[in-house]
Length: 229
Image (cartoon, rainbow, N blue to C red; front, top):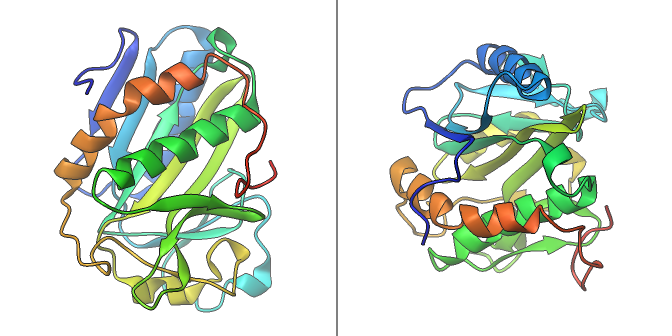
């Protein structure tokens, strides 16, 4: 598996939690710099202190208990929780040098997370009509283990994905996660797996080359189980 990224892509890992507003400011500035050709692309892995973020489709009724700071994220999607024990991947790539395919980018991002989870023995999938990454919870029901939310400005991507390693799952109770009430959330820890941030990051890097290669071609036709994008 690949241990480094191609030249021109920075790989950044933060161990200490980064406040969401600070990360959003830095990510926006880096997005602008990539678009201007003055900074390399970036894949940034980090965690946040507890926060609820609102996407552009967030409905006020889905904010049930604002026990943590609520921040307008500017990405697509609805309300999402971020907090310790959840690994965030901010992916800032220039699609002008790849296939200019928004759906293809999201599909590839989902596939990257799904393949990384498989390496830990977790079967995960896309679910038609439900954004995110899904798996079978300990009660046998489908549950969300990863969230996807992106924004593309001048064909440069920002935001990305969040995967639940071992967050406090009760914190999701303050919102309707991604606007989906019928299904719960789960984590690797709830599934009985002890995976550190460092282990997750290393596994993710191992699948990075395949993810980047997919971005060179338009998205394939949706297969059974893929959400309509």
